[in-house]
Amino acid sequence: MALPQPPTTHPQHAAPVPPQNGLGTAGFVLGLLGLLFSFLPVIGLVAWPLVILGLVLGAVGIVRASSGRATNKGLAVAGVVLSAAGLVVCILWVAVFSKAASDAKGTLDDLEQAANKESRVVYEISGDAPKASVSYTTYSDGGSTTNKEDTTKLPWTKELTVKGFFSGGSLTAMTGAEGGTVTCKVKIDGVEKRSETATGPFAQATCTNFS
Image 1: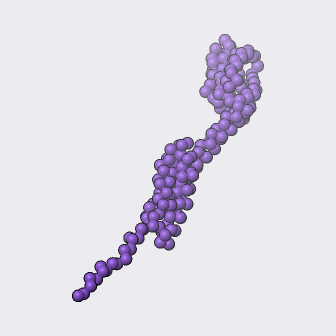
Image 2: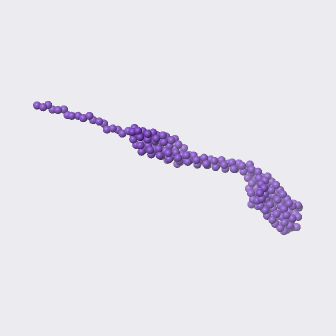
Image 3: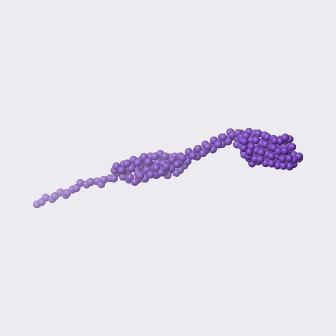
């Protein structure tokens, strides 16, 4: 009588667990967050460490996946791409802020230069009128001044030095009852800005709208 044979057993092998790519996943998450934050002014400063870490971790994840020690290589590649895009946006923000700061400094320098500038203003009255009444006004950031003079001898000249931003003024010459011709002329730093002529009794020549 044959003895029963023991059941044949085969060794059980556990299914291999695929290696994971935690570094690549972390690089993807950091890259995504960094890209989103990079579009926000001021707050986007936090994007700098995020995108830099995302680049590093994503690159390590790609290396691990290429050597067979990890999977999800695509996720690591996506993390590198997102991090690089976020870094580009951060660099663009730096360029924008740098230009704005440079423009602001240039504007302040211009204002300071204008505040300290001295303008040489020359008022001239010429003609054959035997008598003329002259009035002149200058405007600057220091205020305005108005003066009047009567002259019986032409030409008449008045030279002024205006400090700060010179915003213009006026020059008027009026003949007397004897009539004649008068011409007003305004020069600023050697450049003629305005000239007008009037003839007859109580004729008035006015130079305005110059700066």
